[in-house]
Image (cartoon, rainbow, N blue to C red):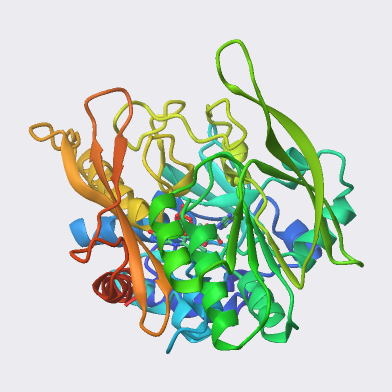
Length: 467
Ligand SMILES: Cc1cc2nc3c(=O)[nH]c(=O)nc-3n(C[C@H](O)[C@H](O)[C@H](O)COP(=O)(O)OP(=O)(O)OC[C@H]3O[C@@H](n4cnc5c(N)ncnc54)[C@H](O)[C@@H]3O)c2cc1C
C-alpha cells in the first residue's frame, strides 16, 4: 500500500468501501511524533461535512445524514481504532451474566460499509475556522460544515490545582475514573478481581459530568460483585453535595439489597491520595448543631482519611479540548459547554459549526441517548440546509416525550433496574429537559422489567450505531 494513501480520506472517485479498507485496516491512529510532524501541512482532502468524534453523537449524525441522502459527502475523524461503550459498562464491573468486555467494544467497519461515509483514524490537534480546516496527526482535512462530538476530558488541574502533573497521572493510573471509553474500565475491573477484603471508594465528581447516575450505578454493581464473591468490606460513596441523580431510587435499592454495605457520605471533597498507603484524604462538611440568622445550619469542615482496597476517583469533567481548538463561545462554568444559537444544534459562534453530545450547551442531560436524539436532530438540520431548505425542531408540539431514557442496574440475582426519563422542550432560548423517576407497580423504584429494558435498550442503541 502506498504510504501517502495509508491515512487518506476518500478523495475524488475512491469509494467509501475502499477508503474503509484503507483507513480502517491500514491506520492504527497511533502516529508517532515524527510521523505527525511529517504529515503537518499535508492536505488529505475536502468534505462537505466533517464530523469530529465517532461516538454516540458523531456516528449518529454521520449515519443519519447518509440515511437522508446517500449522496452527501460526509467524513468522520476519530482518534481510536475501536469504540468502547460506557453505557451499561458498570454491569461489566458487577460481573453480570454475559457482560464481558466483548459486549462493549465495536469496530467501525460495519457502519462505514453500510452507510458509505469516510473515516479517518487520527487525532484532531487543531481547528482553523477561518481557513475551514481541521488539522490531524495524519494531515489536514478541509470542511464546509463541521460537527463536533468529541465528548469529555478529565479536569485534574481544575479540581486539584496544587497537584503536580506526575502525581495527577499516577493517581489516574492507580485510581482510574473510567468515564471515558478505553482501558480504564479494564484497569478498574482487574483491581476489583484482585482485591482482598476491605473497602472500595467511589468518589463522585461535582459540577456537570457525563451520565450523572453512573457513579451510583457503579456503587450498586460493585456491592453486588463483592456480595457474590464474598468479599468483606463496604462501598464508600463520596458525594459532593446533598443530592445526586435518582437518589431516592438508588438509596432505596441499596438498603433493600445490600443493607449497610453501601455507605453514602455527603458534602465531601477529595483533597489527596496516598498511593503507597492506599489512603484517600478528603474534607467533609458536617453540621455544627448551630443555626445562622437565616435559620440555616452552620457547617464546619472536618478532615477525614479512609483506607481503601480499590479507589475509583472520578475526577471532575470538562468539555474535550477540541472545543477550545475551535475557539467557540462556551458557558462560564468549569465544564465549558458550547453555547448554542438558540434551540438548534448550530453553535452561537459560527453558523458552519454544529455541536452534539456531552459538550452541547442545552439544558438536557449528558447521556448516550441524548447524544443520539441530538445527533438525529442535527443531521436533519444539516440535511435541510444542504438541500436549500430551512429547518426548526417540531414547532407545533415544541416538546418530545422521553427524549432521554436512562437506565441503571441496581441488583443482580435477580437483575433489577431503575430508570429516569427526560421530556425535552424548546419554548425558551435553549432546549430543556425535565426528569422523572418512575416507580414500578410494586411500589418500589426497581424492577426486573426495568433490568430487562436496560439490556434491550443497550442492544438496540448499539446495533443502530454499529450494525
Ligand atoms: C460509566 C458510564 C455509564 C453510562 N451509562 C449511560 C447510560 O446508561 N445511558 C446513556 O444514555 N448514557 C450513558 N453514559 C453516557 C454516555 O456514554 C455519554 O453521554 C456519550 O458517550 C456522549 O456521547 P459523545 O458523542 O458526546 O461522546 P463519546 O461517545 O465519548 O464520543 C466521543 C468520541 O470522540 C473521540 N475524540 C475525542 N477527542 C478526539 C480528537 N481530538 N480527535 C479525534 N477523535 C476524538 C473519542 O475517541 C470518542 O470516540 C454513561 C457514561 C459512563 C461513563
